[in-house]
Image (cartoon, rainbow, N blue to C red; front, side, top):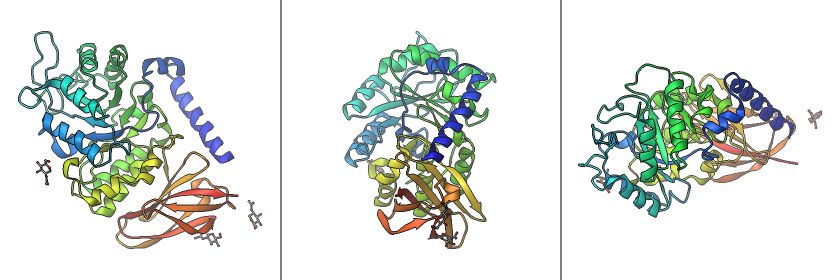
Length: 396
Ligand SMILES: *[C@@H]1O[C@H](CO)[C@@H](O)[C@H](O)[C@H]1NC(C)=O
Ligand SMILES: *[C@@H]1O[C@H](CO)[C@@H](O)[C@H](O)[C@H]1NC(C)=O
Ligand SMILES: *[C@@H]1O[C@H](CO)[C@@H](O)[C@H](O)[C@H]1NC(C)=O
């Protein structure tokens, strides 16, 4: 289908122009040639639920629960430790030391445990002198040493925060860690947590596998939709190898309704955002599982085409988001941000399907293929703070 080809080549042009401003495509690939992130990363991170109150048992039990709930089979592979895992002082060789009171067995043993479950272990540091909690050192000035330490432990993912730095530009500090990771001898997913300050979408692909486009999310409707909006602006810059990151999931933490969490998960999925669970997976509810274990929605996120959806129409309180998928399919999200139930129409003109094309619609939350063949548009009635998500497949 021609419209898809046009979109892709336009995207390529935009990216090429942005790139040549600083360095060539070739040297960019050399900087971060770790081969990771062909689709957005999936897993879990400790911060949203546990903050600093983490220890090795929580991490191990979480790994166990990802397997026992079946979440790991659905693709949730990364078990990511956030801030507060290290002692405040480095050892006499200058190395980071896991906190003795909470990680007494050390990170190598923890990585071995997590790997034995078929999962991957992620860790956290900061492009400054201290991390955001100020409870442990950052990696600024110790990049090569820390990258080597992480690789020697068997770490698979690094989230790299931006607190307590020397006030130099992130574009100076982050690539130092990129090079250090590339020299460390182990493919390590590099997640830039620069909060969107210096438009990391414009340079993130040269440096990391994902880049935060926003400040931290919190477990409220307002916080969630505003992260989604800010992240959407940069849709053209996401692609296999590097993704926009509107922050981790709050699904299951209790601050939103089930419908709001469904919107949260749907937007993150269609936006090709990292799907990093942020709740306690050790005793996860049926409602939360229904959301984060929705295979059809996960498949949209993990589609090999890797194109981030855009908001294609807004009218009052309702929105239509859409993006192309492989095999000429289109993912569509119809969402009601207002207080009243309302009918919302997705027009083929808006979502990039030729006008007379007849499509079959699969409802990804009802798990039903609709009997109607749709031509030109699809209308759904949507409750307040609720959404509908479809895959449309042209039939000829
Ligand atoms: C969840 O499980 C953990 C350990 O498995 C337990 O410590 C915690 O209290 C549980 N939380 C709830 C809300 O049941
Ligand atoms: C769409 O179909 C109608 C009726 O079948 C036809 O008159 C019209 O020319 C078609 N439009 C396009 C763009 O193919
Ligand atoms: C939807 O398309 C049909 C033709 O397929 C047309 O009759 C109808 O007016 C359209 N509805 C809207 C809301 O655009």
